[in-house]
Structure formats: structure tokens, C-alpha cells
Length: 152
Image 1 (cartoon, rainbow, N blue to C red):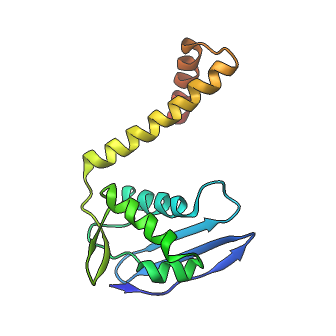
Image 2 (image 1 turned 30 degrees about the horizontal axis):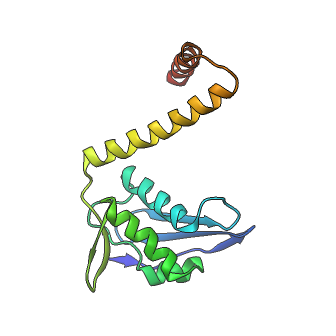
Image 3 (image 1 turned 90 degrees about the vertical axis):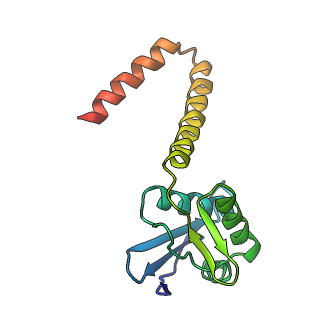
């Protein structure tokens, strides 16, 4: 059950929404019209991240498409696209007449999503490194240093 407590703050065309779950903490969504990322993708990424981090648990109801669109002051079509993408990727499921709910956390699905993100970052690193003629060995050395510093 979703208690529809929310806060809306407008700052430089950024909208922040916080939904408070009855038995849980909040689900935060913020969108920015100044971002290069499409709005549906901003919503998709934030809900996916909250699911992957365990902030949204299996079976929890998401805000309805219409209510989220209204609160964010965006098109229902935009919100529906974000939900459709989340469902296609297995993060949520829809029950006709009841709404959208968080799917069972599939460890392999989450692992694959993380691996895909890592691969995308690595491709960007390779592209950027090639611009300044950085060798594979230099990239690995940089990674090893950063990895060790991050562990401290």
C-alpha cells in the first residue's frame, strides 16, 4: 500500500518527488529538463538503481503511471515508457487493474546489469585513452592505483 505523501520542489527546472511507503522508507525521483538524458531514461535509471540497491523491495507498489506523471508534471506517455522499459528489463511487473510492482530481485539479472554498465564505462575509457595515446598497461596501472586508494 502506498501512502501518497510527497514533496515537490522546483529548482532550475528540476523536479524532486519523494513517495513515502507505508512500511518502508522513501522512493525518490528527480528529473531535470536541463539534463541531456531523456526524462523517461532519468526515471528508469533512478527506479532501477533503487531496486538494485534494495531500497525498493520485491512486491512493493510503485506510484501509478498517471500519479507519477502528474506529480512530475510530465506526460503520461513519458512515464509509461519508463515503466515499460523497467518491465521489459525484468525490474517490475504489472498487475492489470492494480498497478506496477517491484519484481523479485534476480541476482543474475542484477549482476548482468552491472556488468553491462561496467562494459559501457570501459568502452568510454578506451575511447578517451586513445585520444591521448594512453596504452593498455598505463590504463591498468591507473586502475590498480585507484583501486588500492579506494580500498583505504
